[in-house]
Image 1: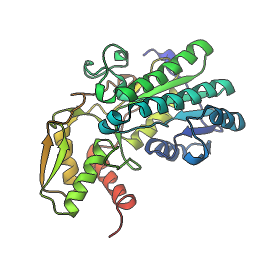
Image 2: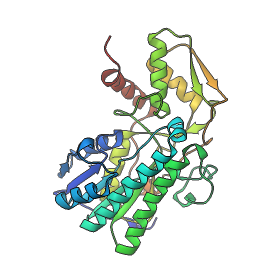
Image 3: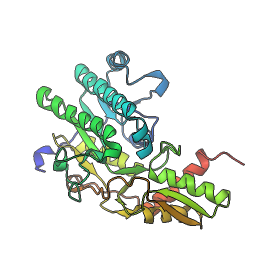
Amino acid sequence: MDNSHKTHFCLAGKTIWVAGQTGMVGSAVLKRLASEDCELFLVKRPELDLRDQKAVRSWLNKNKPDVIVVTAATVGGILANSSRPAEFLYDNLAIETNIIHGAYEIGVQKLLFLGSACIYPRDASQPISEEALLTGPLEPTNQWYAVAKIAGIKLCEAYRKQYKCDFISAQPNNLYGAGDNFDPDTSHVIPALIVKAHAAKTTVQSSIEIWGTGSPMREFLHVDDLADALVHLLKTYSGLTHINIGTGEEISIHELAQSVADTVGFNGELVFDSSKPDGAMRKLLDATRMNKLDWAPSIHLKEGLESTYKWYLQNVVEPT
């Protein structure tokens, strides 16, 4: 990355809208922005349907934020992606096109769109660089979400090229942390494992069943680290290329499951169901560009799992 992509964008005095602010990422970004000298728009989900173009356009024209961070999305794990493909594709396309085009119409000073590591080809060389985008077939188990996210990234590129909009995008790897989705049918791997391990511990089960072989390798990023990275990007980056955000560290699903079990205090057997899909075997991001912008994560996985389980106990588990 050459130095022409670096910038200094001051957030002081700016009005900022975090779209999707009630979700895990959005709430973390709001919390991080609270330490900046800026004004935040607080919009609850029932107040604005982001899939409704008219409603989004009306809200933007009325409030005219200086900066937009697009964290809103319909998300979920392998089961949710497989069973709700139309919803994953339509919802995410509608949300991003409404916000990005609306931002252009009102002359937003800066927009940051949040993508996902699943945008990359299933068999991309590891670690995955930004240049790997659209160089091969996607992972079938999350292709619907991936296609929508790729469209959002390309929209930001297109509006930058055609209209000179300062629209950028970032791709984190697997996220977890406070505010995550702990629904067993729609959650990602870490919250799903926490729910299973906690239930097994409290009901004194001898084992828990886990999808797949346990052999895939994954990289996990705490949501508070992501929030800090996104604010850093708003301040320091302005370029066409989307930016990877990761830790550079991998762990197998088997090792992860054991770490979650240890965190929760479940001492039973981990049973892996190899008849269920594994997804991509590796998905490690090359975060060289982000590192050159002088940012690195600070929350280790062990620490992150402990704080996430604590949040789950305080906010999700019903008191006995």
